[in-house]
Image (cartoon, rainbow, N blue to C red; front, side, top):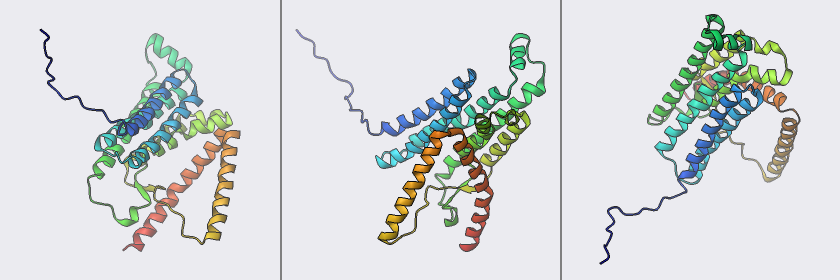
Length: 275
């Protein structure tokens, strides 16, 4: 006599669509962790590119979630955890590996660390950078439940966003990859960039946000001219990027740095306007 097997739980189908945004977030996390592996083997260019690719995936996951209408609190928390690794831990580890003298590293492995100024202080800055990034992400998550910010915050972040902080901290390495000048490898210069970017991430200073920037309404004729001009400009940017990527990344970084104080001035102008 055949025994009948009773199902204690109903079999549920697993929807795939809600998984896509989280898969994109996981790709960002994988890129961030991979950058540390490249840094360990002194492949500096690949390490920076991995963090840049993590920033691309980080920008895409939210858009994919909104497009598929699958936004969730779980996805937001997962995104923050990925950002902490990719933009808070990986850049600091990369810069620490890059600026440490190979002889000091070999001595530290063979005989133990004997020079706290060469090893201890830079590592403290790495920890400070990661902590400030964590504070920035935690504040961003809590702000999701707060009341909407005043309208003059529409084009601004509160504090430097995590990808922007990572980019600012990595600028000396980007300049080095472009110029091959050891001046940018100076530990004091690198530490200064890391400390400034860390403080900006943890601060409440307004920084530019381009998510809600739109072109003004134009007549059809002017709209076509504007579209052609933007496509031509984009073609120039792409050509320059492929011809000399590190020069392109350095110039973009300089523009971003100059935009920070300009953004603060524009913020206070907007704040006075809405009063």
